[in-house]
Length: 301
Image (tube, rainbow, N blue to C red):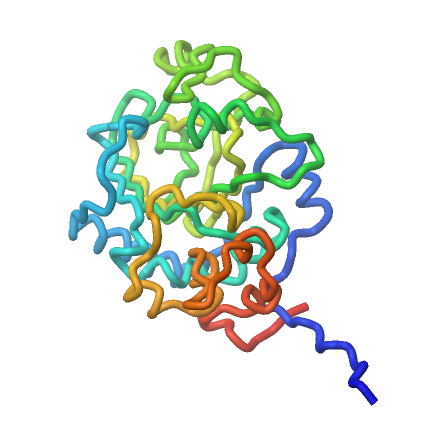
């Protein structure tokens, strides 16, 4: 007789977002996950930032759409420079929320190391991400996002004017009235140049180890910094069928050091890839179930 036994259920090392968290993200356009990374993990993250900045790698040529600021050090495609980012990208506490928001189909589109030095003016204007064509796309309120960014805070950003992230809750559902090539939002940037923050905006106060998740369409900017250098990772995520943002393919030596899950998140299907795999991966649940970090094998439901 044929074997009619059901396949064993996939056991994950990550947990999904709650219904309340998903509803909050859908309504407000962001989630502030507090204390996602431990003090020791933050320490290793800071070591990775310092190592990448000291190496001063030219990982990606300049593009006219990039914001340039003398007080900002930004290393793009940083994962190609250091393995120090791998444990954060493959961490169950971060993978779980992304699996929920992107419906299990998670690709890492970019990895950045970002240091914001002292500057008395706003460090980055109000804008949306992804360029002018993506800026014009808006999903319904109950739709899953196209792209999600994770900002991992490694230094204290609890005081005003410490390079705080600015956002307008609910703006991910609105198209700005002023549209330009850089996706600047001029109705907010003129006041920002005078140091003014709209009453309906949120000044994010984050501690080391916190993570902010938000979609490409959220209106956001960065305040002045008069306290200390602000160090963060910025990871951009999308669907497997989307093009990466700061790499074409990762070099084999970079992929070889990673877990199968992390390789899949960089769009790697091995040598036997079929073009349809990026739209309809047949083994996605299994590939994304367990990573290669310290939590591997310690499954949670």
